[in-house]
Image (tube, rainbow, N blue to C red; front, side, top):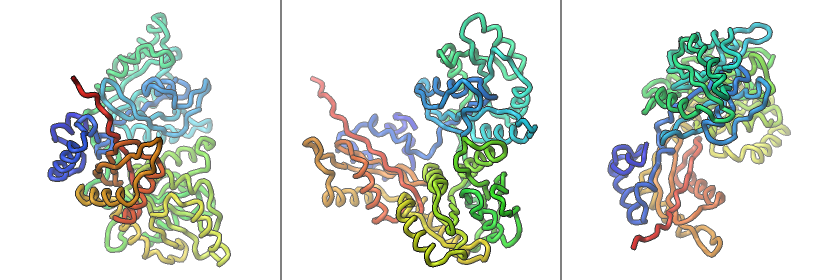
Length: 485
């Protein structure tokens, strides 16, 4: 949503017309104009997604850094440095979009062709357009040809980048790539920036202006539940238990599940779509082969879900993987339920230490519903659906602008921001810019410290609930404008 949209009222996030009129009135009273009120980053329309794909060491991460205008993607002169799918926000000619840097595609030394398909499937499946990168000095290889077949099968708009063209002498090499059948190859030097403008113009032509929801949350369909957790915490056992039959393979060997298994399951009088995912390894960049691609698939399953049920093995001490997986779900903006599995294996001593571990290590999700279950015996499985429904209700909660500002007025009066540098910033008014998860924008007279923002979030939860959902709070500061003479 652009500033123009806000100015003329054509599109204002998820506010209804009455709330929008009230919001604009408050803004005018406090000296904000339309340029201050750009809520695009908090709206519900996703940015267009561009997947940068190619075989190892063709310069994908260098190109990503060139596109986003800063060095964030890790670059090293050897293949295979990038393994996670990493996304960044970029802007070109006033248009915002998301760039996804993917790991290099190659066939495993053991010849597991499915690995190529898995990586290609993820990179392309979540994108609105594909930027296919080829090393112009090497030319097209058999791996490039195989990837092109996958791209064509997906039917996504594709831009061909002939990278490592550092001068006119190598432009002829790029011309040979017309033979790939992907249209004009754009000669680029990602390292030096040569030709990047023409390439980005072509990318903008390929990306949609108003993209559809990339990770679909179909209205009226079954609610999507991702079962996530580190290997061997009992995700597949839990799925089998709620399904009432052996739907997926269960084995004591960690990592049995490699592909997400989507299952429509009747539970609590409703139909749910459960996604059983592969366990997330301690350090994704150290895994290889099918386990690496399983980790990528887990991320994709989380992207498609509405609520994440995070399984934790209660019989073992909390691990760094557990907190990292929770962070993934929170950062993805999903509703969250924490399920402590293998409760039947607990004794009193372990319960005492578990509670201490939860207080110390899981403070970031104190708001998440908790269920203590046993996938093996079925203990407390009936509590899972109410916890999921509670989390989804919090995830979709909306507070009216009038009610929110009445709350903020009382809060500021009772607990003003600390004075810093002789000044005391004040929250002037706020609005809820969206749901799924709830997103709030506060308009203030000065910078609000992180500690005060956390205090506001805590009080929002105390007042309005928001059980089971992360909350996003951003601040717009009123800038002093010079009066024209």
